[in-house]
Image (cartoon, rainbow over all chains, first blue to last red; front, side):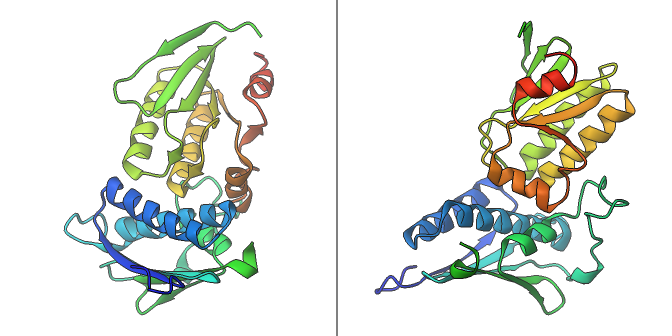
Length: 143
Length: 128
């Protein structure tokens, strides 16, 4: 929903692990980002981060339980875009994720999603037990 | 470059595979390699093809690819390990700068042989 002044685009979606639902959400957010003049590089960064966060929610949070949802809430302005990604899992300790860039981990096929989110977003932090990720992209900081 | 191409089509496949002088050149049907189900399908098909080959030389060409997730990176790591284990090699080419940055952030640019173009990658196999 866009406010009457069109200074903010806010919304939320409850997703099942169905690619068309995620794709629809990405298209919705991409349109809002374009309206607020985020660069192609910024849109790439956020699309990737949302994808990684939602997939982590389905895979690690909800443990691919088809009855569970991942909720995404967003708030996009001309200055910043904030996303909350909340799964129905028990959470985790983000500090316990091994560094995938170390020589001993470089050939392990998983564990890079969180690293990409931290690299591409201006801020990323977990709330509560770790099932709620809040991430923000600030235009001035990164464009 | 002399190219003897043999197209091998799998039903509903998300990749196109062409044999070029003994190198398995792989291209993607989709511009976004994000969807987990598609990535699983791509992974299964690549693994089957590599396991069926002796000394598999595999070139994955990213021409036209706009987005890539960490799950896709995981598939590349698996394919790389398998190709090496079977006495072959994986090379990557035609990666857009935005996607190349994903490889740099994860330091996977050090693990993979990355060439600017498919032709350069083929030369790297000694089959250009």
